[in-house]
Image 1 (cartoon, helix red, strand yellow):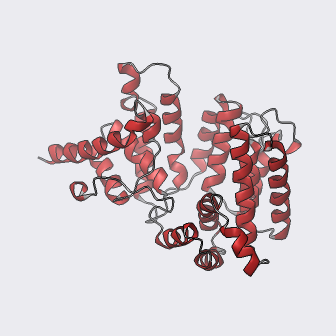
Image 2: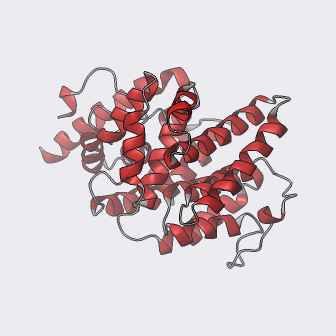
Image 3: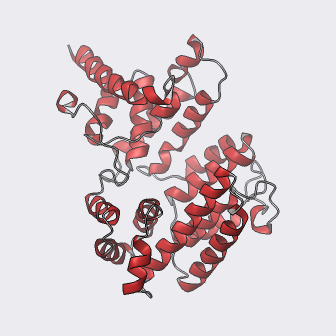
Length: 325
């Protein structure tokens, strides 16, 4: 029951993935062996490997734990891919901060990505990392960032990099989100076209069904004013149907296959579109866990995000109770 939830949501990067939570907590404490074991066990599952290395790298980037790991097991393949991930995170952060080191860090990260792609040719993660770095080349100077798309609706971009990921892991969630982020940064009108092309190909249950929800939040947060029409956008099309279709896809998904952030976007969209019974289902699946987004994007200010989340949970439960009365 939502009423029994803790007063404060739990924001853990591993979310509902219990094995990943253990590895993350160990990494934060400077222990790496559980991460080594987890990555070795995860290697055959390309989608899970991608999502877990993304989370682990975000944690490792804030510590020296990989240095300690390297002293003990310098040739470990899990260590190698996490190092590449961390280099990418450092390059993106340096560019965002306008650091004088940004260009050098980007080059180091790119070299690591290409080396990793050659070392394990079946691994999609190095190609996902190259997609992440593509956003730093907004003028599309690099040839791999100005390739033509097979769809005439879409402009030239890093389509070859996306294709490399999808050859290794069709439906890779992070790769599609990296492409969406790329178009938001480089040429915003192409973001909607990209999602419209992807959605018919996404199988039922795929977390890619949440992609349109990110478009709706982006549309909302880029509105200069918050008048009554904007505040109620999820009651109108296409936003209402986006929430409905995402819920229908999630309803047939494998348990645990959607990350907390996608479930948070779905819970928000269902609540905002007054589909309360469905919203309760998603909030119940999330349990104590939550992500900062989309709440920080849709609240009046980021410091009001958690209050909005708690209000949404309460209203969803009350709305279901009223509907069933």
